[in-house]
Amino acid sequence: MDVRQLKIIWASLLVGSLIISLVSWLVFVPRFKPVVLYFPAADSLALSSEIHYIPWAQSLPDQIRHVAQALSTGPLSMKFRRIMPSGSAVRAVYLKGKQVWIDFDDSIQAPDLECPLTPKARIATIVKAIEFNYPALQSIKILIEGQELGVNPPPVERKS
Image 1 (cartoon, rainbow, N blue to C red):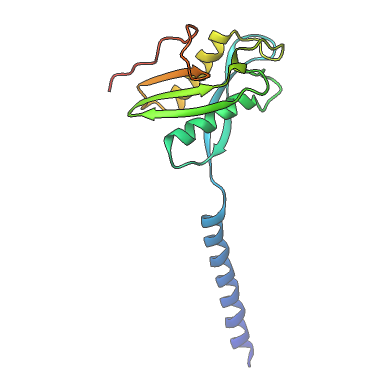
Image 2: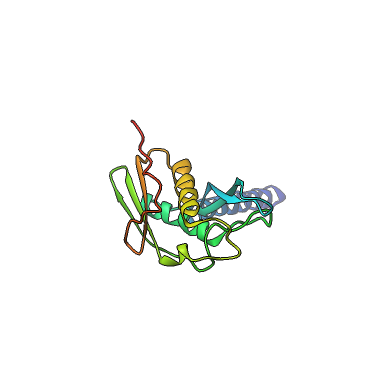
């Protein structure tokens, strides 16, 4: 083998490994979607936005579930406070047409020192985040243990 053939072999191996790496990255890398969530500031109750990255999901209910779970997990920055008590869980997300129902467990209403918002304000903040990230939805309703409560703000109605 001469030097020219060795250069061709090494160049081919380099290009081949680059192509394999690129295809692997495109196929196997977990994908994330940026979403905007709202949390109260640590020094006041004023809401501010924070970008979170949720796992990519093909179905809209799964995407909304990830947003709701990120809200229940809390903010990334220490500049913000939680909007839900620790341990709050999303039970289910239902979608019918352009209407969505998000069902939380009853811990969302529990008093919590880390979470300065009232239950009504918590629900309004959840609705605000969902409507911002999914503007095509015409109605967003929050359920607690499968029941609509009087603390729900009026559903968000949008005209097409």
